[in-house]
Image (spheres, rainbow, N blue to C red):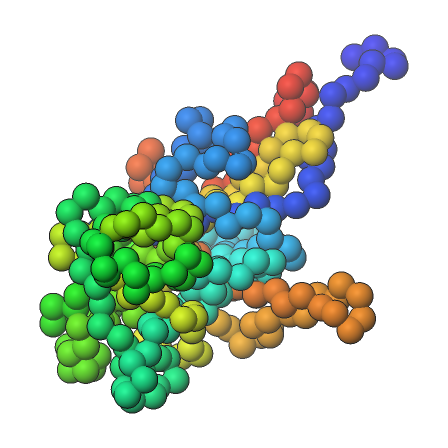
Length: 328
């Protein structure tokens, strides 16, 4: 290289990290694949399906506790080869926005919808006896919930609604599209026909109404509701410290390229983990005495097998160099 030659940037420069999540198929433990060759340079505002954009995050920290050790031989105990020991990777960051999915990821266990209460029903910390659901009708989609004339009057523009099937006393994972909880015994959930709607991720906000339908501001995460699903108003979201259910998600974190290249961190399987080492919320000062509340999230990376060579891995870091940047 001649003196004075200008090299294009090899230093990735970024202002913010963006987070994308997609649910692991709990029945098969299959993660959602991020192929950097096919999808690596996607428009950050329109991620490839089924990735969900949770927008910008702060204080992104990765920690690797993966160990290596060596085989020592001979009278001098010289190291002759290395081997990799325990795989251990964790991350934590702050969500700057609050929503159903952000709260669920931060809490890690069942995340519950507080269904609109029956005034004469019992009171409970995660929501008591709910008003009866309204049945969805044929023709419903992920963005239009058909309930029929008359029934539509029970909802107002701006309402949050949960749309999912009645609990049928089954055991196992429940929730349309995304496994929201695991039921081991129907008696543990009081044989409650509303239980699936209490935990479902199939939640939307009513943006408009027609004479027979609720039009949602965003598509339901689980897609078109199943035949026989019900709709109930949601008053709030609630999570709990405790519970036995552990969520699993595939996650992708992208350092936006202000100059230089793009860096992506792909975790095939993340499980939220409350490790007690930091506050679950943080107050971010705007101007005294006003502050914003940020949700802190912490995760343990779970093992996945790479189909190319059978290696057990927990994270992939990919780098997309800037145009014409040197390779090294």
